[in-house]
Figure 1 (cartoon, rainbow, N blue to C red):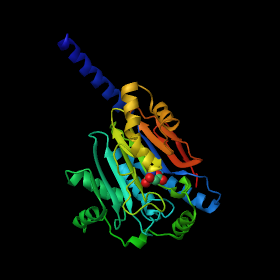
Figure 2 (figure 1 turned 90 degrees about the horizontal axis):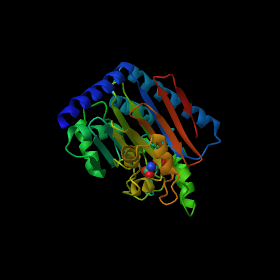
Figure 3 (figure 1 turned 180 degrees about the vertical axis):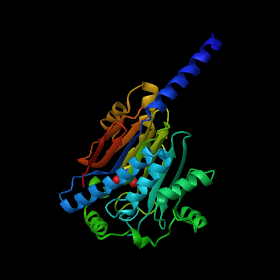
Amino acid sequence: MRHSLLPACLSLTLCFGLSFAQEQQYAIVIHGGAGRISSNPERRAERERILKHALTTGQKMLQEKRSSLDTVEAVVRILEDSPMFNAGKGAVFNAAGTHELDATIMDGSTRSTGAVGGVTTVRNPVSLARRVMTDTRHVLLVAAGADRFADNYASDPMIQRVANSYFSTEYRRASLKRVQQQEKQKESDSMGTVGCVALDMNGNIAAATSTGGLTNKKFGRIGDSPIAGAGTYADNRTCGVSCTGIGEDFIRNAVAYDVSARMAYKGVSAKTAIEQILSSKEHQVRGGIIAVSHDGQIVTEFNTPGMSRAAADSGGRFEVHVAE
Ligand code: ASP
């Protein structure tokens, strides 16, 4: 029995593999943070411009048959370099008035992943996360150790070093003041975390997330973004996921992995899995989730008033929505 099933399974796999390759699908989705909807038209316009540029760059790379891993890294770097988002330049301030940055990258073809938490001098944390994945036997490096790890890349143009003040903007300084004057932090004050998920023409999924965390967070606090399975996840068999929102909710509920697990174990679509998680009354998850499934379905869902997002695929979809 076993022997007769084996060739059938193999030919099925081969068949799916071939038909997928022939179709040459790609899909890409980006988020620029969940939170409120801004009434500032200039900020909205600038955020829209950057998101469009990031989406166009990612789409072009996928069309040129570049890997999803290269694509998500390149897209997140663009967003990290823009002061409009809470990642890299423009990151929020912690309670000590400095910046500590978190990022992860994950390769769905091998489930390899690398992350950095609480880095203070690395211009593009997503690229350092990728070095953790490829150049060490570890998954996550944090704080001074992660910054010291970056010293190994003095001649690598992808790992530029900056003073911590490079990340500061007046906009985020005003947010810190406002939050410190409030008794209770509102979820809207961290808006602007970035993430990207892509499916390339070889059927490989990758995901990446980068953030400054929550405004006024305690010194040393690590959020969900650099925790594989919480804020970021990728598995070619199911989907790639990047999350944004109150990181503690996403860690407690292993949200990014839960999306993949619901698909694998319950057989539901990525959209259903994410809707179930974001509407749960028992396990509160405040924020937004983007995903691309193994068959190219794009999902963007949130339970906050808004979430900036952008999506494109080989079927002609190209859209950008700006919440702030
Ligand atoms: N999830 C991020 C964190 O908690 C913040 C965000 O997405 O806005 O660090």
